[in-house]
Length: 131
Image: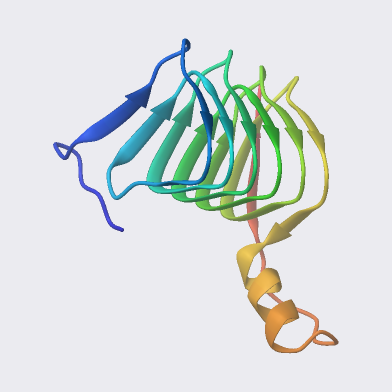
């Protein structure tokens, strides 16, 4: 599901409420509400958006509310974001003021836990906090 700039993207406007899973090969911009899992290359979530379900993306920029787990290679959580669920990432940026209720884990730790539940991951996650 690799996507390069110049490729297509889909927008779910603030007037849309979707019930069901979304799988997109294109980049996805969500301003409405989604009740279901989202899998895409790149996700941008607007401040007024609510997602209830798991999010899986290569890159994600979240500004709204998410009730569910998030898995992303590059994740940016903006100050307006409200996350209720576990977060799995390779690179993580969180703006001051963002609210997260859940656990943070590097994706290497997630893979190691699935492969061998007693194994401790020695990965050093990249974490930055934006002011």
